[in-house]
Length: 210
Image (cartoon, rainbow, N blue to C red; front, side, top):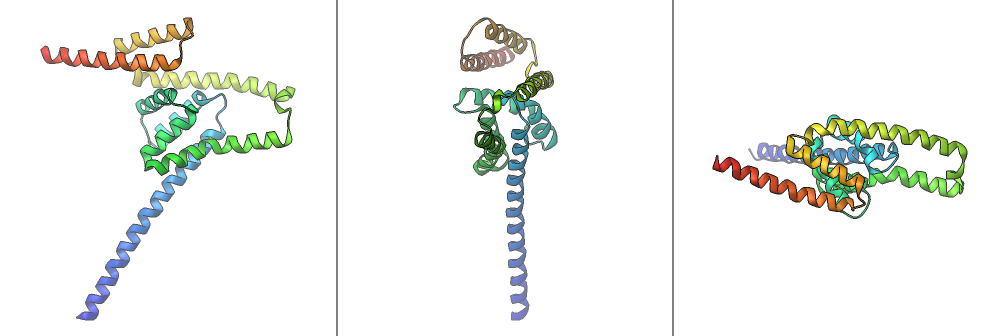
């Protein structure tokens, strides 16, 4: 009887160890996937944080479903108001949602790793790299491609943002003001947030009184 109880206890301990080990491996795999995914995004992004929007939509929203289109737009809006690069801020928000603070760190390291390697190599071997005619021609073509990718991503994300005439009017107002004035983008984000909250408040009151 004692031997049977001893064997049963050992089996239970082994099962618990295997389960905890499996969970640990799963958490590690997800963090590694975060690093590699954002490393891919960072390595193939040219033109700044907004240029990575199409890849974010394909890899993060459609591919791995780590975030929704609305959440990505929120991350961009908040990241615009925070210090640092938008790409890093968005990576931290996404990684934090998927696997907590450590996931945010893995995603941030992934998105900056390719740039760090490339810039270090360029600084070490080619001091006048940007002045080369071939490089300037290549970047001219890349800028055109980036513009098309950003426009394509905006057309896809507008469905989650322009949901009624109020949001469409707000979009038109911010778009015109950004063209005609030199106000900081932070002011637009803050003002749009306040207006959105007011619109939602009055819309809720209207539904209660009706």
